[in-house]
Length: 81
Image (tube, rainbow, N blue to C red; front, side):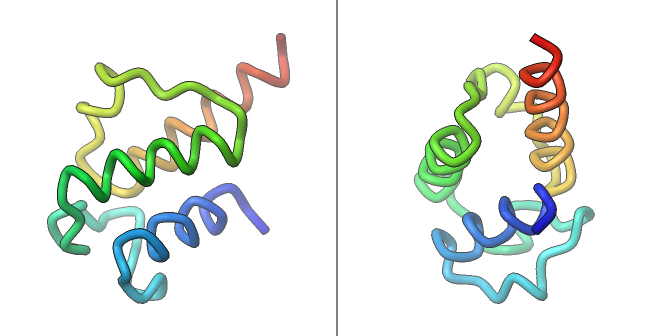
């Protein structure tokens, strides 16, 4: 399962939205995710992938794709270390 699919599973479960409705262009408003949902999703993704997502970075996420791209970037950095 791709990183995108894994993140999508986590977010869909927390927000209670059909994961098939989520695209990389979807905003968190589109999927009706509130700030608590976002915090829960960030923590769940951090735990799943053993990475840290800085608050300053998380605030820059405009779309689901931004979130996925950030996770992929952090995992790539982790593998190089």
